Image 1: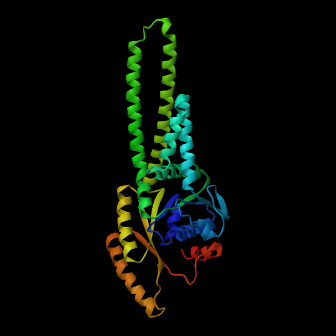
Image 2: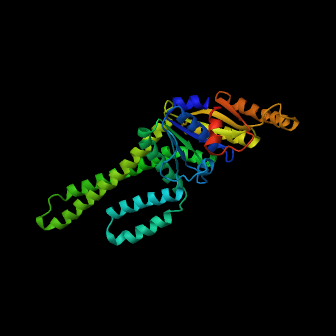
Image 3: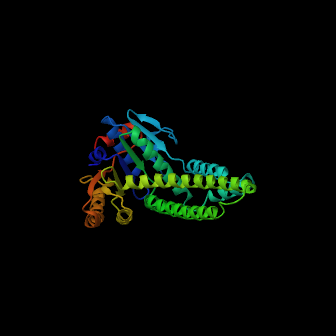
Length: 326
């Protein structure tokens, strides 16, 4: 099921409660698709990166080749925020007088740990990866942070688009008022040339601000459209057959639905196999009770069960074995 979904979509997000195996399942899916000849980019947005540990090698913010056709990236939240703030600082420096640069720098530093800053920076990075990666890869797979963080991230494109749209409208209203004032004073004498030059500089500054806002609106709008495109993008929820992960999955599905995100698959990971002794049989029966609720609430979504492995899935060899079973 997972491999078939990966063949049909260009972008897949894997999410779910922490510790259920999102990284393992998303990595195995990426490897299975790459083994078929597709060009695949695997991206971790989780601050607690596990890709490097799973593949037993260093993976950073730039694409690293893991196997033929498969590249991987681990988004560094701190670096992403630093890059984001550097761009904002540079833009503000170019728009404001030198005498205000120190105040700008102070404000930027205070913003570094502001609520939502990391999510906004990661979102911009995701938007860039989607925009540029779609040209170089057949499939982009995002291994996301635990449910709460991911749910907030998925609604951000709509929120950021609306917020930026509001700024643009206020900017346009201010520009129209400024133009009206300038027309009232258009019959000034030559002696007012210096003031005129100052107003021209102000208009150029306003134009740059508008360009920045329009560029951000375009970026978030494009990402929002991609996320809402069911033919192109889908979301896979990974969970364990336990009470809390099942309840969290039902809630995450509702949150993603409100954000217009298409959840197309559920993966129940580390299922207890049957016929392996009394202990595991009891465990399997308990899992079936929890999964009955999942079936009742989300029975319309395709589901794939992955059974508990005898040993840890680690490195290409372990992932190859898991990929072959998808």
